[in-house]
Image 1 (cartoon, rainbow over the protein chains, first blue to last red):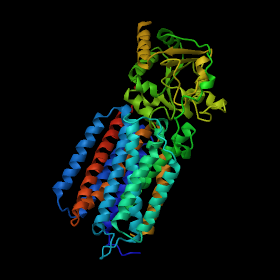
Image 2 (tube, rainbow over the protein chains, first blue to last red; image 1 turned 180 degrees about the vertical axis):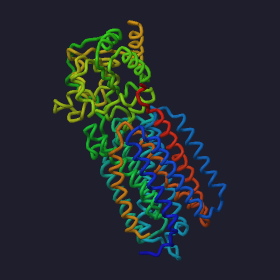
Image 3 (cartoon, each protein chain N blue to C red; image 1 turned 30 degrees about the vertical axis):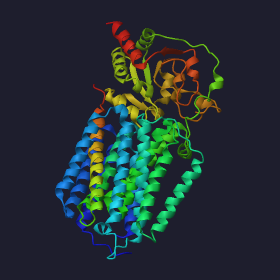
Image 4 (cartoon, one colour; image 1 turned 60 degrees about the vertical axis):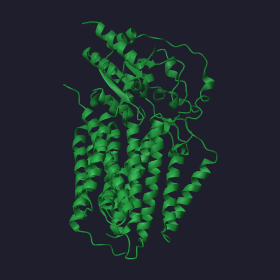
Length: 474
Length: 93
């Protein structure tokens, strides 16, 4: 082992406390009641880490450093205040790209001035272990950055969500990855600049190449995956700096992103490998085209819907992303409030991929003042559809399709779905009979006897139902 | 600290992360992502060291740039998480 400069035990202890506070921050999220306290733990942990660093390092120019923090603080707080809740996935992708780029900058700074980080001997030779950590850190950071930029552009609509498929892309990607790993190996014997900067450049390239073939429908997985990468980048830099706060945080964030990716993959019945391989959502026009015979369906009006729901004992609302796109969540909550006044028991059923990122729909409903104890996850509410009078589906489609349970040829076969077809009556709000969901498959629920199709814009329909409900009675 | 000691902390922290994250309620997965974003910017520690050090001017400027980026994330991440969590309310009874 190399002789490192002795670390002040109090400093090491402070970073450890900061790491423990970060664990408590995540622990707080086990329930909405404790979550705000958890967020404060996170802030305290960060304050401890930053203050410890500032007081133990002689600042060459405190004005510059504090100025940089102030600039970042203003930009960050303004972004956080202004962002619309529907745009959360883009914001998170943008934040990931910043973590990635910051990791690259720190790794590059450490490479250029290893003495300041205590990772080189008197001759300026960087320690072998530090070279591995630095190489991995800069590579993961660069992949996180360029991947997140592409994810941001796709989510924000600056770039089409359709997958971009380069010829021979698997070969190019594997070749680039192998080159990066080979160069990190070579970096151990030769610390010249070209090795370090080529690793950086190739990693920016691979991040870009990895994300462009992934379609819009798979973006929840991609955002979670990049979340994980940003954690591993922080952990790699933590190894370089022997900093426990960074290592604990990196491990927490890395596992968190990995678990969220797994949950999202499971919710879409997609394997992680097939998401990474990309191309999903490329051929929506061909899929399901065969089963397009005209089948009878029953149209309904807002008045019919209002009458049926006000007569019901139990109503389960199934919101999908179409609801959020139409900005119908406030009208929907008003509708639920009026129904509750009539003595109807109203619950919301959320599919894990109802939004554009994990837990997105819950945030959108919370913003519309829907109490969180009326909102249930798929596995908690699915057996209640059999006892419910009305299932009100608004802006969702694939996540209610019973073909996922029965039809082995369906592209969504095996995906967990909400059992709306078991409800006594299904009210299905949909823009038109023509369009189909992301997976491009027809939904048998439309044609069932107990289904009434409410065709129109989700917000207008919810508003009309509110009007009909407040007009009737009282 | 030697590599093995640090590596042990890392592996144990991965297990802690695994169990803590599985206990997060799915309703809070979006705030989970934004708060993990904020805390992964603890990388600011490295950025501060680089920007404080004398020697290489390029290294210092890279450090300062990283301080700005990490601060955006820290303040933005905690602020947006706080904003979301403030929206989660129980039924009024």
